[in-house]
Amino acid sequence: MTASTLSKPDTVTAWDRHAVAAFDRSADDILVVERPPIRGLASAVASARVHDYRSVVTPGDADARAAESLAAIRLDCPALAADIAGLARSFLTHFGVTEASLRVELVDKTSCPKFHCDNVHVRLVATYHGPGTEYVFVSEPEVVRAAPTSALVFLKGHRHPAHADAVLHRSPPVPPEEKRLCAVLDC
Image 1 (spheres, helix red, strand yellow):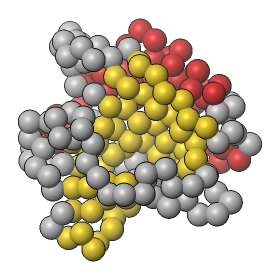
Image 2: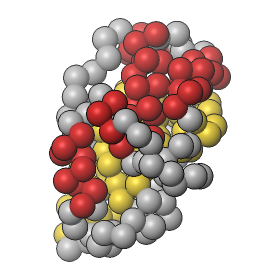
Image 3: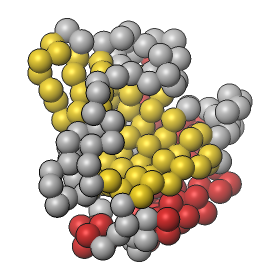
Image 4: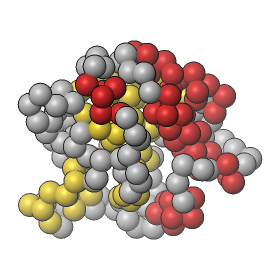
């Protein structure tokens, strides 16, 4: 990944850039940004294929990577593709990188059940359908919290200079006969 600064910070449109910038500078290891769900997604998820898609994404190919990710899981939802592409472009611009890792996964079981912190600068998890990302504060490990479905979850990783080792996260259990759809961006 190249860590060069992009020239248009005002092109961050997927979230309140001031709130995420404050998080990036703060000692907080997690930021949860609630937002409305994408309409009509539940029926599209029901017929989609359990699978994951992984790629590198750049500002110039965000639309293509988003479309490819949904084709890989056989999910037809233009609004979702637009949202994933918008998140990718905003993520790249906001964190000043020219490429990031993109993963879009549709699962029917827990994919990462252990609480952990990733070896990244920042991770963004957007759960579109199913249970949201679970997390605990290290000071209260017995209190498991869950981000709402549709929320954006920003997590500082070990490579972030302000990472405080205060929060651990995991993929939530997926109830029987249900699916979880999420997009993950790492830099």
